[in-house]
Structures are given as C-alpha cells and as structure tokens.
Image (tube, rainbow, N blue to C red; front, side, top):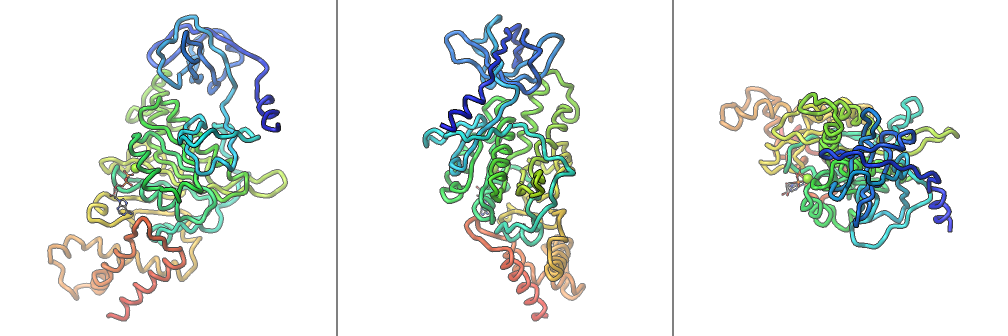
Length: 447
Ligand SMILES: Nc1ncnc2c1ncn2[C@@H]1O[C@H](COP(=O)(O)OP(=O)(O)O)[C@@H](O)[C@H]1O
Ligand SMILES: [Mg+2]
C-alpha cells in the first residue's frame, strides 16, 4: 500500500506535450511544451504500431528542443506526439536489489523476476555533496589485495583510478575487490563492455558469492550512448541509496573512459564542438560531477555524517598513453591512481600492478610509522631492482658493486611472490604487512 501511495505521488499531474518537428541522425527536434522543459528532462515519443520511444532532452536550438532517444529512431514520424514524463529521471532501489543485475533504467536483466521499487526516489543525476558539508576521508579499508593494501593503502571514502590497457587484468582485480574488501555492499557499473565480457565477468569472474552482496548495473557497447551514460549515473544513484541505509559501500565502475565516450557521442550529436581527441567540453564538466559523487558522505542537518562511498574507476590507457585527455582529467579529480602494466602481466605477475607508479593520496597519513618504514624499504628494493633490471638480465651487473642492488636482487623473488596474488587468494591488510616484514627481515639475516 505504501508503495502504491509513493507511486501515485510520483505521478506528475501535468501532462506536457510537444510534437516531432524533425529527425536528423540521432537527434529528434521537438516544438511545443518548451516552457516546462530543461536539459535532462524525460520524454516519450509516440510511434505508430510500436511502443513509445523513451528519450531525453539534450539541448535546445532556436525554438526547438533537441531530444536523444534511448533506442533506434525507427518509426518516429513528423508531427508525432511527445509526452514529457518528468523533469529528471530517478530510481527507487531497495535492499532486496542485492544480488541482482539491472540495466540503466533499473530494470532487472537477470531473468530472476521483477524488482519491487522502494519508497524514496534517488535522482540519477544527483549533484555531488557540497565540498564544505562533506566529511573527511575515514579509516582505511581492508581490500584483501596485498599489492594495494600495502602500497596504495586506501581509506574509506577515497576515490581511486585504475589505469590499464585492455586484457591487463582490470576485471579480475575488480572482482577480487568485490569479493574480498571489508564492506557491506558493492555496486558495480559495467559500462560499454561487450556483452560476452559482461556475462563472463558476472558468471565466472565475480561468481555467485561475489554477486550476493552486489548490485550490478550493465550497459553494453551496442546500447545507445544515452543508455551507456545513464548506466554510470544509475551506478552512483544505487550506491547513494545503500550509503543512506548506513551501509559501507564500495563502488566499482568499469570503465569511466566508456562513460566519457558516450558523453562525447551525445555532445557531438547535440552540436558541441570537438576539442582534444574529439572529446567535447561537456565531457570534462560531466566527469567531475560523476566522480565526485563518490567520496565522504554529506554531513546531515542533525550533524551526523552519512557513510562514505569508496570508489574505484577504471580508465583505459590503450597503447600505454597515460596522458590521453580522459586519463589526464580523471587523474586530476581522484585521490590516487593504480597503474597496471601489460609488461608485468606478460611475465605472469597478476594483479599486474606497477606499485612504483601507483599512488594513494591518503598515504602516508593512513599508515602507522612502522608500516611506513616497511613501505619505504620495500619500495627502495623494488626501485633499485627496476633501475638495474636490464643490466641484471643480461648478466652485466656484478654482485658486490652496490649493496642496495645486491639486496634488491636477493629479495626480488620473494617480493614478486608477495605481489603475485591468485584471484581466489585473500590476505587481510594486517597480514600483508606482517608478510612483507618477514620478507624484508629475512633479507637482513641472509646478508
Ligand atoms: N589475478 C589473476 N590471476 C591470474 N590470471 C589473471 C589474473 N588477472 C588477470 N588474469 C588473466 O588476464 C586475463 C585478462 O584479464 P581481464 O581482467 O579480463 O582484463 P581486462 O578487464 O583488463 O581486459 C584473464 O583472462 C586472465 O587470464
Ligand atoms: Mg575487462
């Protein structure tokens, strides 16, 4: 009954209509009803003999509104009625959504039956909490992945980027975090991946156990740009819902590059000028708006703080170009980055994280002094080895030339072993530091 009341209240009593004035490419122009319209408004376009086509207002030109459809424009005729549905899209999740897979409209796509909507609507395009009313990044989160827990120790409410090319192991790493991190809920957004990859990720990589405490939002690469972009907004809205239930939320988005590409497609269609690499200006205004929604929770009027959303966003850096515009923009917004390297993957070390290039901006504050010292010693070894690697490999380095390098060579197999972690292998954060200490001290005794 309460659901029914909420549903009735959600109905907008005013029906505003417009008419299709023209269709060009992906855009539908509408006249009429303009006084009630704004960018982001939802509409439905009537089609003869077909279900109405959902669309969103993406801009205005002269006296016409520009709409983009959520599906193919086939069947849209001039003069067809356009019904304005709502000023902004929202979703009403419940905790019963856990374990489910939804599309960018919040509809289940896992064949496990309908989803009952909750009472409170969460706007898909909610603004990030204002900076001054946000809590601070909290205690650290135990991710269960040794390379990250030790070398990029992550705090609750932190936002990190994972920079990697395709096939380097992003999906497997995300699934490890989804299953192992000490949180209550994981919201996963799979944006612009191929359908086969999505199925593989959910069925094999994430698995039943990982899915149990997760909600997965999916928009595959073959879906219209508007749906791909909306999947990212949906992911954040669902995460915000769970945060407001007082749950510890981990948000994983794969990939934010595909979100940027969807925004580029929408922008170009609406007539925005292309700038760097064809990306339009709105790409760079939408990125922070999306990424900033994760992070420390807002401070409520009663002074209590809503829980944080810790988030990891993957960024594609194909061809190893870490300075391409999206990577650059994302790096500037987030509180750290994890770099995955194809060369490391090729020699069989997974997760293929280049710890020397990876940075967590909440460190060293979230480490104890002994942990910091361990970190320093480990990095020194890894960096000494990496600097001399070529020489060592061709046998040009002579033992005894540099005691630091000697030690780095002696410890290298153990450190590589420490950084290698099978996807089903969990190590808790404190155990990781203990293990690293044993390795580093072992080396001391040997000398
Ligand atoms: N932790 C791991 N242990 C063993 N193999 C891994 C691991 N992570 C990735 N791989 C290998 O790398 C391949 C690509 O990983 P995937 O996560 O799908 O890459 P991406 O999502 O970056 O395209 C996997 O099919 C697997 O063979
Ligand atoms: Mg992948």
